[in-house]
Length: 210
Image 1: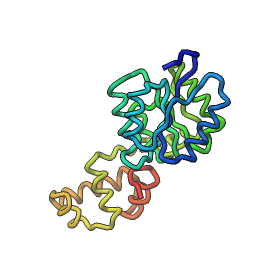
Image 2: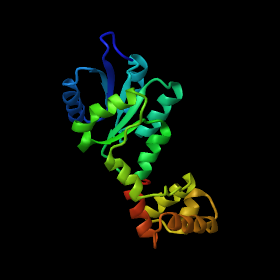
Image 3: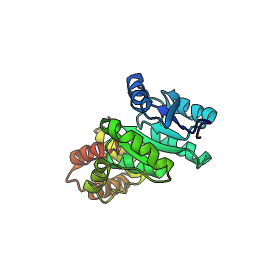
């Protein structure tokens, strides 16, 4: 919402109080913006959004209870009015794609927030998308999107955990031949020469978390 004073209302969702304080300090000097609330978890962020109906939500991707993209998707399923900008340290291209698929209108890395955050907020309020050069470079450097299926990501997680194909088959209750095929496709899609490289690429591109 735009407040009665014509200000852009902003909700911050980030689990680090120091980060929230930093964002508030950045936006406090902007005459057309006001912080109306903050939250430290995805669920608290959703509840705050429902109560406050801010014009813009700043969402971290790494939250203690749920991933940011899941919460963004839930909000966007309920409304098209709130504009959501991801503000995070997460730089894997797959996580950027997930945020965009969920409905985010902008994506910023935290180290660029001071100079670009107000610009991003005004841009999404004007109906535009906002992605700085650093985000565009990340997507370009990893183009095309790897396109792993949800099952292939499950297999990749178990590969990264050190399980052999037979153990993965048991864990997922599928045939070992099926696992063999999944691993083959994973290596091809990630352009990896072996299982270790596939796991490392999965971490770098945001398919896996430590």
